[in-house]
Length: 369
Image (tube, rainbow, N blue to C red; front, side, top):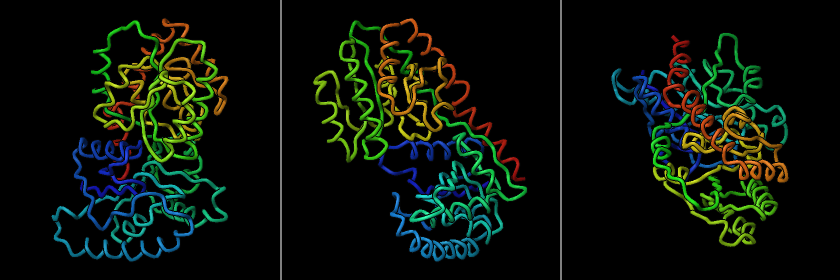
């Protein structure tokens, strides 16, 4: 099939590092791996970033015009033109960035409509978020197939699907090969254990996670450790201020190109992320694929990608004392770190590798025939 891949939140070629971009790129790879062609005509693009809720009415009006142009363009193309498509596939649809185009275009053209990673939150039905919320409901009502990657989204999405529509599980996934290869080159050192965190340095939830991390570091002052923070963004100054009391023990690497991340993970001993309001976190998969045990907050979809006592330790969200206690436990027990490291690498390889996700995606798309 020729698949139009629509990414309302962030285009796959965006230079802004994020898990959403990596997931979009991964879906494109999976579709091609399954023998499908992926098209992204210019008319299907939307402005990147999350708009303010008060702009949603204007976006809805603009989408109707943009959708009509897409429909007319498609109908005017020869049957085998590379911009014609047999299926509309939207990655990521939620109240702050819904899919305004897919429901209109797929219905008019009579082609299947698929959404990967949709969420429906009834509490968003009132106030400034209501227009985006209603757009999500319209998208779910039109969908032929929804691929859920976060377990907490499953019930809300299921309640909004029309009779005959399908909902299937698609495990969050990465290409584990470069991370496994980097881990194979890891060599023991006599340096204190290196604690690694990888995350965008944004305000709100990301900054809240860094605050918990700083509180945990304070409680771990008497332990031997070093820390490396990978990422950048508008909140970097605030985060540097949070970490200033630790001096040289905490280093900032800035934004690291994705191709160089495997060796960064492989140089560390333990992966930390408090995960305040985290959906699931691609970095958790990358860390585990490189053989790092994880200490994380038990938030959102994190338990679906980090198995407690198998690949790491999960702690109550926002509880810096519990987080620090879990880190201290693993700092004091190298054998336990090694056990969890083996469990992490094995679990990601068998449950979250691209080849596993490809089988799940193929099974889902087969339901559309």
